[in-house]
Length: 195
Image (cartoon, rainbow, N blue to C red):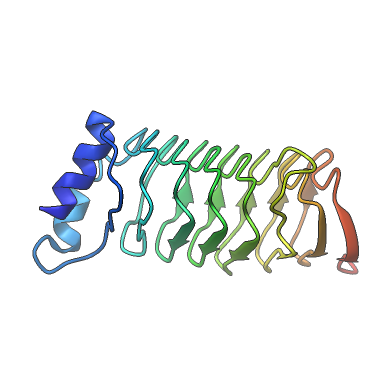
């Protein structure tokens, strides 16, 4: 029942106070993948009271998936390969993001998530898209440190604008840093590899 209710929420734009989308023996990962084609665009967009989502068993979700889910405080992803454009756009309560298995973060994925204070990027990451973690400057939440893992080749333009005062560590694999990727950021530590 729970899995169907969650997709019902996204498709019908209903507002649920709390919901956990997780692997369960009743539905299994196979059943969840049966909804895979539905879980591409705008499934949970504007579910304004959605407060708890576990994405550790979901492999794919697309553009606008959780856009404007204003009450969502955390996003943890172990097996998601790509985070689509605008996926968490303006999720104003999002404080913690853990991207363990993500390979690509597309444009505007976490745009203006102004409560974001904890960001963990996994070792599978290769690309951070334009405006991915853009935040209007002087907003209350700021990530304290960003370690861009080895393997990342590109950081898009304006990717970390407005994140306040953070420590930044860049990988030796980095080839492209887009225009003003760290504009408005005060760095106590900014580590650039020799190459």
